[in-house]
Amino acid sequence: LFLDACPAPVVGITGTRGKSTTAALTAAMLEASGYRTWLGGNILVSPLSFLHRVKSNHHVVLELSSFQTETLGPDCSAPQVAVITNLMRDHLNFYPNMKAYAAAKERIFAFQSLTSAAIVGRDNAWTRSMGTRVIGRRYWWSAKPFPEENGAFLRGSRIVVRENGRERVVVDLKTMRLPGEHNRANAVAAVMAALVAGATDAGIRRALKTFRGLPNRQEVVAEKGGVRFVNDTTATTPDALLVALQSFGSPSTRSARSGKRLILITGGTDKNLDFRDVPKAVRRAVRTMILLPGSGTDKMVAAFRKQRIRVPAFSADSMDAAVTLAAGIGARGDTVLLSPGCASFGLFKNEFDRGEKFVASVKRLSF
Image 1 (cartoon, rainbow, N blue to C red):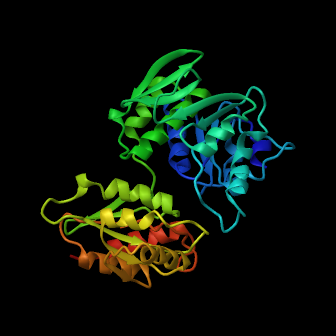
Image 2 (image 1 turned 90 degrees about the horizontal axis):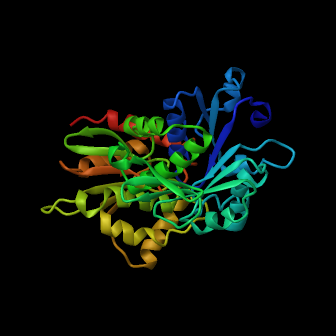
């Protein structure tokens, strides 16, 4: 309904991971380039709520889930600029297999016109295959250089854009405030999308210097008694959990004297996903786990048992109990990370309710 009625050009962004940050960054880059820009979709803002205020000289950026992209078809409008970040295992409690899930995502550019643009992740096997079927103008994006074709990539810390054989450096990510390799990748996708939509190099650089990230995504919410508390509630898949463990459990974040400094609050409801890679990653990075109840937790524990990997773990039947327990275990220099790797249903309304309860519980702590 929104796409059919919207008078402004639309950038639609989907993918399993990174779509929220990529969408918010793209919107910030367009805004910093002088455009009135609206941000909505799966990012918790219905675009119908601002449709009456959108004008033809504005820009709209929509984060789109697979449940939204699968409603696109030949009889309705498509985003003029379509972006896909990556495709990983998710929602397999809803889709019968990865092929069906991928098909739902691919509809974001399946019905574009010849003059539309598609920005496609090159580093992911699923999306790279999708890129061969693009109808309009195709731009790849990648975290590493690739030859010849149009798109954006990282060369060292610089984002390079190539079009028709000519390359230029748009921005050096040394100035970017967002931490993490995954956010460097998100920035490449956002830069390519923003440029195609009309952003300026100067606007892109301004946005990257000031953008601090979104709530609920590896968000440091407090430090109490020398213990840092991080809300990563949107990590609803094992793959997302692995990224968080890499960010917060790397050797650079450990103490030479006391070893691992990470206390992980994890678990929840299963989405028919695979936890086989979780035990080894947890063993490398985590000192203690605190497990929330749910079918995903049971599956995760079963993976630990099958691989005979032992990590100290406690159970908690509420977020308050989990945070209180984590705070009691934590010592100065430690990080308490909420990164569930599972859906939230059962104990919480949704992943954002889970994050809000984590933040509220942390605020109630007294040291």
